[in-house]
Image (tube, rainbow, N blue to C red; front, side, top):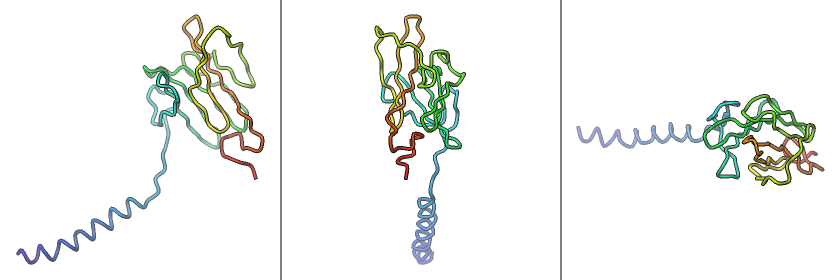
Length: 153
């Protein structure tokens, strides 16, 4: 009996290694879902410990959502190639400022950068009424695909 087990162990180890190797070699695609949710299935990409920022992408359109620490959705916008659209979701959706629809930013309020990538950045400005203004800013896109995809050939 011991001889049979000793012969089977190397074969069993080989089968396990092949199965695991195939599983490790399979490409994994991260799927981000949950736009508008308190705790979406997406990585938190915020540069601030006081806010959560989630980025979703579908059909070449990027969606950026900002939540507070309690998971309350404060606002979201869509962007593609330097164009922005404020989405009607979140507690502060009426306080979203984009290059296409700019709101006055109070100079007396501190501004905090909560997200930045190669083509946009997101700034938050607390308001005296307890709301938060979300400011979507396009960065210099000269020679860049403003959807964040990199350089244009």
